[in-house]
Image (cartoon, rainbow, N blue to C red; front, side):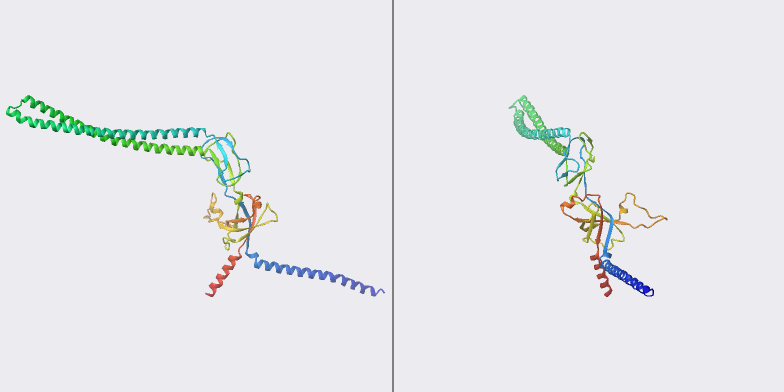
Length: 373
């Protein structure tokens, strides 16, 4: 029996090794299949996916700032409040601007009165010209009659039929008529020249009226600008304004963020954008929404790398140049519903993958066509 025992132990050991061998073979086969599936997936899809985690949500925010100076009389919105287009946000003390508007209106009324007075004076002057012309016509007639009398009585005086005193009186009357005619003619010229002066005054009054109307319009704008309104729909952020605060034109009071129009800016390496095209699909994963994939499309590409728009662009014309892979900002439109957009806030971190298969297929087709050509 002692000789049989080792044979049974060897068989038992062989029996124990057989399941282990099968498990190892099965594991190897599964690993081989998984590698094949992964390789096929990479070849058909993975190698066309360009991804980055250097991506952030952004929105075209609007900074609220006054156009006029004054003390803040009322703040009409609170922190993080949703506002609509045209909704009042802040009201400044408008009393000084209302007074300026009233003064401008009074100036406009005065300039219009000047025009009316000038036109009335012009009409009166036209009547005066008519009167002066009539007087001149009468003076001309008197002069002609006086000269005719002198001409008629001079021969009579020469024959003794009329006295020299009579002729002298007629000559004196003729000279007076001539002087009167000259004075009336001069008066008519003065009256006619006064018309041009009155017309110039009326034109000046019109110009002053235009200036007063422009000043009134500016006063109206200043008075209207004391109420600051939102030009876009969104939510209030970074509200720093307080009642009683004195603000100057351009003082930042708050920011309106259009959260409903949030988009994605992804900074891809320059080696990744060769096959990217507008309209390509993108898969978006927001850190604030773990486990949820959003979808979007490539909207546009920046006209330069991020370093080109830096405050101090790098100058690489030096001897110690080190090549650094540049990044290009790519704007991506997000397709999401209103409930999801409530969570999408500017500044959130995002991972994004862009599928460039369409561009790769087009490039390969062009290469084949060029090869045949």
